[in-house]
Image (cartoon, rainbow, N blue to C red; front, side, top):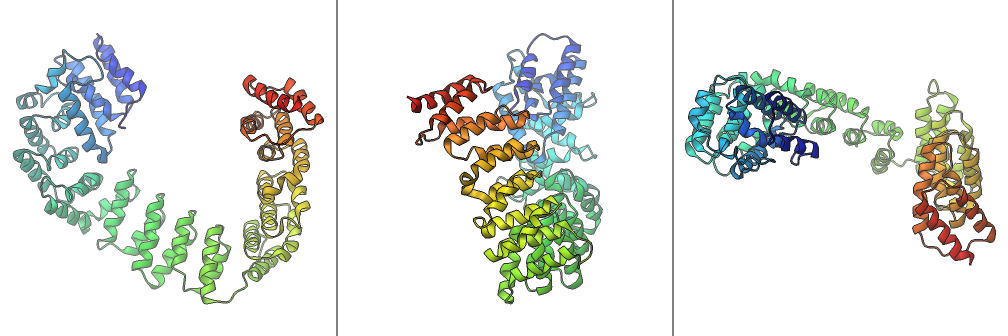
Length: 538
């Protein structure tokens, strides 16, 4: 919001050019469509235009820009408008208009109070340099009763002119009633500031608003705000409900259904601190199935003394949560986790726990890979040929962790797998041993039909021995799949920039030069590769 885009700046510069009324109206509409509140400063002189059609168009645009201003940014917008209007900085040459806004009088507000779009003029007038104008704006805003006036009154409660400040304070204090609870929640960012202002002591007003928002009369407003589009509003609604006489269990269950991760984590932590028995188990049970790892982690912390619950969580999809569970189980039990995972793998593979589930089986295999030894890798080799990609991926990843060197042939054989996830995990399992399998990687690339698999293989080719790598990359630059070729082309500059210590054989030099002659590489890159080859070929 704080910096205008070039498109908006170009529109604002057009304001200073001679325009017909219809052109001016269309321009104001386009400025409003940009939804950048900082553009409001350039509309200020036109809010008081003597031509009613122009004034109305400018006020409509100003109102839309105000509507798109976040409450926490409203204070900044006030300072921006005041400083720019004071210095006449309107993003266009406004020498003939610079005094129109600065010379606004309180009486003008009274005379124009019945005109269309007056509220936008009234709202920005509450930011004016002139204290008499701000005082009149506050009094006219106090006459509104639909809630639109509240943010501007809240700002003026900290005004530096005592008369303006007292008028705004009294206006806000009269609105601390249940009918305005929804409006105060909507403006929670401005209400938060009241307790920390230094110019004026507004702590009593701040406390009165919070008492209202925690009251039973504001319950419906709080519950409606649970699904507010504004993050700060919905979070405040949950915090206020937890401090009120609302049923805490119901509030927390609503929090766990929220799309806001912060609220779901807050819900789990609050349930651990303030709920007991069946209510606690119900909320933690719901959180255990959350899609987010941080939420499930918080839920598991509620079960650190519950041995059966922790055993179940040994099969959590997240490796970090499985490790956390094992940490707490080691404190309370002498378990061989590899044996637990072995038993689960056997049960899932034989269908002893019901219909086979590839997710549970894959998690159990991954758990064995995290806790087993080299000898356990042999028991996982049958799953490398499983028809389910998820199971093959877990098995190859576990074998790579347990004994990649002893089962290197198994890993290289899987490079031709049709699943990109399997190919990716195999390459990760190989680690620094890729150079030992460079022929297998190049052959797998040539025979691989899945473009996503070829992308993973091309990235691995970039990490092979220097001259083998460039030969493979140049071939991949001509791949029929544009995305694969793009990956290869991005690898070539990295190859050129790397240290050049190994001497190529005559066959390698010949192969590189032959591929360069038909390569679609950009000319600068092709020339650089050719220079490097010729340096060694002298």
